[in-house]
Image (cartoon, rainbow, N blue to C red; front, side, top):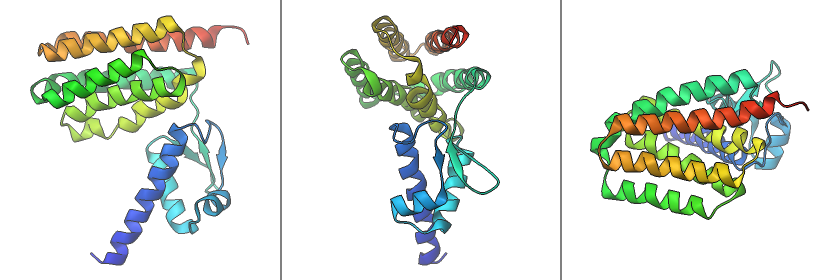
Length: 216
């Protein structure tokens, strides 16, 4: 394996990570076109690593590529949102049981800190904290297949969910659900943790679907 090859792979990964974080931060909005020419000029990169980075992001479900190789930030129809949350339920409930014996005082402290910060947060910061909470659950499972889907958690929580707004009541419900999940994990009760995750995800999906049914 040559150093040039490693450097090329690293550049693709770094480019994909940069674009990914810009999507999550809202700099690139759902549906926005990202042309190779525009991105190349903006990021100061040649098109070869850019093309490869966009393919990586397409596999992650973050962008959609057209036949010309131009990308658009992914959007989600109501049906796609339902599919995403059903899949998230399968992922996150599957993470609970293996996570229990792997929880360290440091991980529990991080989850507690995220909950505390959610109590005083609003807007994009609140959604980032929520996203991080659920990402930690997948990460602490120790299952590499579950961990590969952290991007789905971030895309739904940081990109799609914010467009449906956030009331003070919903924020409180979210904090309460997260506290219940951590309490169950702390007591090594994975079944309870799974139940609280199902309830949280179902409530969030219901909020979005109710808004979708309202007349425009």
